[in-house]
Length: 489
Ligand SMILES: *Cc1c(COP(=O)(O)O)cnc(C)c1O
Image (cartoon, rainbow, N blue to C red; front, side):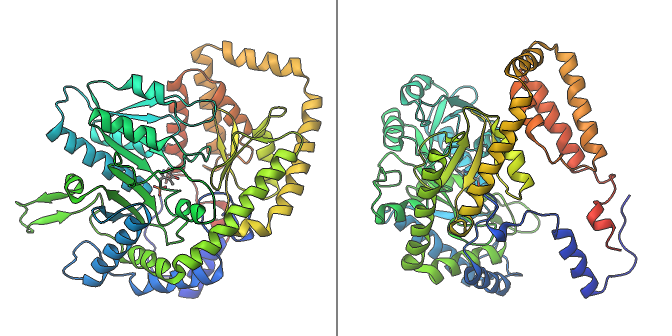
C-alpha cells in the first residue's frame, strides 16, 4: 500500500520527479497528437497560464465573494450567446466541460418536462447514435432513457427514423454540430423543427463546433443554421477548453431564455450551513478556468480566432485531399469542419494505427466503422508532411503483414471468434485483463488485437465486463508504482 510520505520532498527534486513521470505521456507539442490537447501555440499558452495563475485560488461558487469572476463568467456567456445566434434572450452558465454542459441541459430538460409534459414512465432522449456518450452518462445519472437513432449513409442522423421514434415518453431531441466521430453536422434545422412541432426540448451539441463554425462561415463556407437562429433550439453546449484554447475546465451551456435555465439550478434552504445555491453539478468552481476562458476570448478576439481557424480549415482540407489521394486509406465521410475519420477498405485500420503509434502518432480508435480519429489543429500544419510519410510507411508495413496472413486465414479466424460460445469469450476477456495487469496496469502498446476483439465479440455484456475489468485495474492502487516513476529514486 502506498502511504503518505513521512517527510516532505525538496521542491527541485519534486519537480524533477514530475518531469520524469511526464516522459511517458504523449508528446503533443510535436504535433503528433490528434485529440485531448488543443494547442494554440506558445504565446496563447503563456497568456493562459498567467490568467489561470492569477485566479488559481479563487472560487466561482459564491459570486458575492468574487464579483470579478461573476463578471467574467457573464461576459463569456454573453459573447458566446451572441456568436451563436442570440438576439438578446439567450442566457446560460459556465461549466467544467462539455460533459457537465450536456448533463445540465439533460437535467434541465427533465425537470422542465416534469412541469410541462405529462410523461408517465421514464422520460426519453432521442439522439443520433453518433451523439456524445455524455448523454448516456446523463441518462445513467438522472433516471432518463436514451433512445438512439441510426444515421444515413452520409453519417448524419436519419430524420425519418427520428420522427418515427418519438413516443409519449420523449422529452428531448438531440443533434450534433458536428458529431465527434465523423465530423459532420446533423440536420439541426429539421431536428429543431421536429421538436417544435411536437412541443419537445431540442439540444444542440456544439461542444466542438460552437467556436469554429461561426468563423468557418466568415471564411466563406456554407454552414447550415445550427444555433439559436433556429426557433426550435432550446439549449446548446459549447466548449471553451477545445477550440477557444481556454485551460481545461471551461465550457458553456446556453438556453433559449432564462425560464429554461431555471430548471438547471439547485437550491437547498434547510442546511445548518446556510442557504446553498449552486448553478451546476460542481460545488467549488475553479476561478482559473473561468479567468482563462475570459482572457482567451479577449486576447484573441475575432481577428485572432479568424486567423487560427483559417489555418485549421486549410490544414484539414489538405489532410482530406492527401488521404483521398493515398492508396489504401480513405475518409469515412468528407469532413464538414476539422474532424476526420480515417478508414481503409483494403487493410485493418487498427493495424495501421498500431504502426502509426510506434512512430509516435496518437489517434483515437473508433468503431462502426473501424477508423482512426483526427482532430486537426493549427499546429498540424507543421507536421503534416511527416504524418503522410509515416502513414505511407505504415500502410506498406501492414501490407507486408496481410500478404503473410492469407485472406482465408483471416476469414477462418473471424468465423471462429463469431462462433465461440460465451464462456470461451469470457475466458478470453479474463486472459486479456491478466495480460494488462501483468504489464503493470497499462493497456498494451498494440491495441489492434483488443479493438479487433471488441468489435467481433457479439454480446454487449462481455464487452462491458472487459472494459469494467480494465477500469478496475487502471485505478488499482495496489499495483506497483509505474516503472518510469519507480526508477527515479
Ligand atoms: C468533447 C465533446 C463533448 C464532451 O466534452 P468534455 O469537455 O470532454 O466533457 C461532447 N460533445 C462533443 C461533440 C465533443 O466533441
